[in-house]
Image (cartoon, rainbow, N blue to C red; front, side):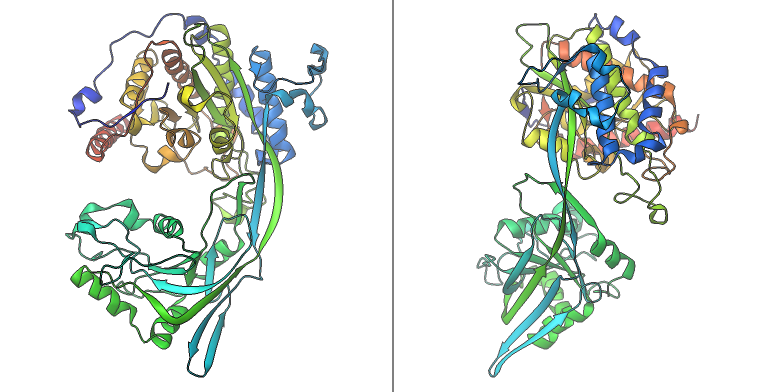
Length: 578
């Protein structure tokens, strides 16, 4: 059962205390099955050049899914989607080498879903029209030269709407400050309008200002402002750089323009969430709108906001914007691989712990490649995430030997590299067990590189019980557990579960120079380290599936998070000096 509390901060020492409790007995036989040799064998299959990077929607991605499903079947797990036609299968059917033509053998393990790939075409357009006494003047602009667009929506867009200036786009500022009201405090109507916001915040040049000290993510991350504008009814948003900083707003850099203009976005075809187009204009457009069309000076407006801390928001008089976004579409089919073990305790078996690892990678670098000069080469993704997938298979085999009291579900997620789409689909669309019965998730992602003793544990900011569980398990493994994982704590498949207040443990061995390059190969992994992390995941899972009480989701306050990070950094530096 899922639990969530917000608690009064207590001393950090109780949070990071060493756990002396013993791991519940019964795990021993399962732990013995986890093998560095088998981990290596699985990685070498999944990360072979012939698998072409396992991109979601590819034949090789399906072949990898079949491989995982076969390992789940061999371990005796129950497929999540039993064949409703009860078609008879013989053991001999599974003896032949894996071939795409035989993928139907494993359909009962596959949670199938559809992806939609979109790309901006050259037909995208932007124009600004000003009405006057004698008629109107329309100025048209060229994408890639005068503006670029960031839009990951799944449908074409065609708007003509008034423009509204919203200052910095702050909606919950210090001392009640908001740019969503005008200078008289009247709320700005954004319904079916285009918002213009500066990508900064009041008094950003003053490190002692209340805004700088508060350091809220809503001030610094533009997408939060855009999302709020969308919720208020805006059709699109202009993101303008602040002229209070040197040489801003700047002209578009060619490479950045090219990157966004040519970017392919992939989303769940079934999704219901709206996306708002973000327009990035050049200095040319900003000047023409503010200075030439409405006789306003953006720098003066922002200076007044910074000086008086009063909003200067307004609707541009007699000005409208026309936006056309034209997309190319491609539909892809992929699948999560899911199997489970029913719990042995009648009172607990309706509750479930999820074990996961994504098996897709970035293919030949058509998306996600960090070395653009090597797009077209196979990106094998040995560490990312053939390593975690191999660990997941070993976990399934271990739990099939040491049966848990709660049920355990094992998921090989696809389309993680496209934005956690496989795990989002599972959580939002088709959970095999009810979300409210999901006790926790243990996720493995990139567990094969860097210093042999170091492992990062994500999820610590959302559960004191999670850290205690990992420490208790680690009493039998002896690794150095670190929690300074930063933004990566939400950068893998545990994130959609955390968003539902489900406690999570994310085991991660750290980034490296080969990440998302063709050099992430199987011969570079530390398979003994992988075994130890898989041991740690198994023992953590053993605790969660067998203990009487469930872990509690806790949103830990920022000051305590800071102390946790400081302690981890200190231990990491000390350890690396050995």
